[in-house]
Picture 1 (cartoon, each protein chain N blue to C red):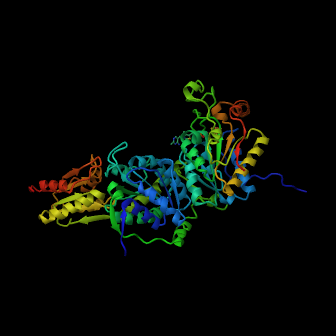
Picture 2: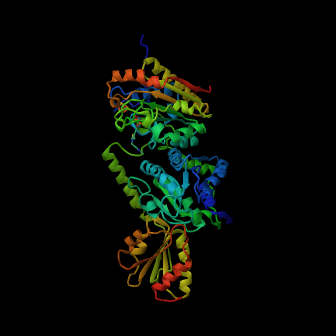
Picture 3: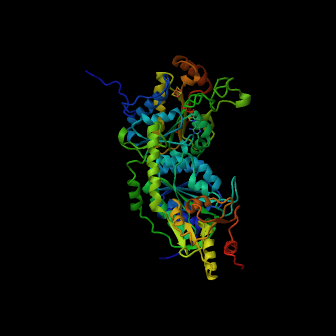
Length: 247
Length: 361
Ligand SMILES: Cc1ncc(C[n+]2csc(CCOP(=O)(O)OP(=O)(O)O)c2C)c(N)n1
Ligand code: SF4
């Protein structure tokens, strides 16, 4: 007897070839989002607001409604969409430069208002698309094209912990940091994303899933070594787990 | 129909609501604070949404979002705030998202002066953001006209799937005048307008790559990008039919004043007085400053018209660049200008015209 064990998600268009670098986790992240939406029966209601950066490449590959926000403004665009379409499932998908640098005001303000949408925050510690410049999340000592000697706290300050910062606000409902570095964590990430989407459909307000990922290309590491760096350095600085869950 | 005594900024907001605007996001800035304040009270009454954005940058992007979801949406600001919105305006133009915004102009660069001025003409008409896009720019000279143009702006925006700008000033924002308000669109009409955008609105469609809503403020592919720009150019060219202009006492005029918005209203009253003195003076008042009524200047009989007098509340003069394109060097263009938030005086215009015809007061 044949048994269906796994099926690729229709959320990602079958005949599109993704342009992400080998070992990049953007594809896995979107796969997990697509599976979550399908399992919850929400694909046809979903609207994504993509940030500018490698995040934005998804627009070509996904089969569902999507917009691209100006760099950093995804949380403002999502506010506009969700407020006039409360029945839609709205999520933003943003990199660390987008969400935590140029878009910090929009991120904080949407969280502070308790906007009823979900933020998927891809934290790879660096600017991907523009070629490896320093991000607010770059680790101390980590080299970037604009910090050639590595991040120096005296000059650049320390990596920004967005989940913990948003945890100081009263309104956010669900804040969690996860990763895609192991099959177990991929499953966990999916569980968190589904939880966040469910909270949104219940009108519970703002949630953010921060996903620690690698950027082999701009870290200057091959895919395997990038995984090691993600585990040994990035996740040490940015511990995984639920930061807030108001249930 | 009954007339209501209303402040300009509130009348503009009410006209927008009556046109079916159901989303407004804005950030406080003088002289238009009453616009967001009015929407904050009014929109909940009609199941609309008001959001005080954390900045002008956020506000325009909220409008980009709400309008992408098919709802008639608006934002409003004054000069420095409008500059902050320019990236978002450009995104709306690129993604062909209809929305309406207002600029109640200030008196100079930087934080400028909060008093009435016309210092943003070139920004408004030539480059309200990066990328060479264009918008229709409507310039009211009375509160009634501001109301009528706001109402119309939403239709134009939807017709073209393009942003429309209402270019006003601190007089229009703060003066109170009797106005006849346009008809309130019913909930059914408002819903119908939204439904008509369903095919492209980002609200969640059945999973289908070819027919999904894909709001695209740009292209990776250079061929596609050029194509988009060419399609946009066709639209911009089609606006020649939409030119709105008031020509007042121009038929036998030897001196023709070129002026828009609040300064044109003052210039018009100067024309009335000068005509009584037997001076042959007229006024061309662009109502759409973009598309600009070049024809009104091209078609003048330059064997009769001796001088064009450009009257603006801007130093340096800005609209004069468009006037020159219409006049094409066929007669001299003089100016009568104030700036910095000073309102142009009727006497200054009258004195200038008298001097031009060599007549003492
Ligand atoms: C206003 C503006 N400033 C700068 C850029 C250039 N830019 C494009 S992507 C990007 C950084 C993206 O980095 P990140 O947000 O970390 O996303 P990733 O590429 O890593 O997914 C920048 C600075 C832009 N498009 N718009
Ligand atoms: S540059 Fe980095 S984030 Fe972008 S696709 Fe390549 S690996 Fe992924």
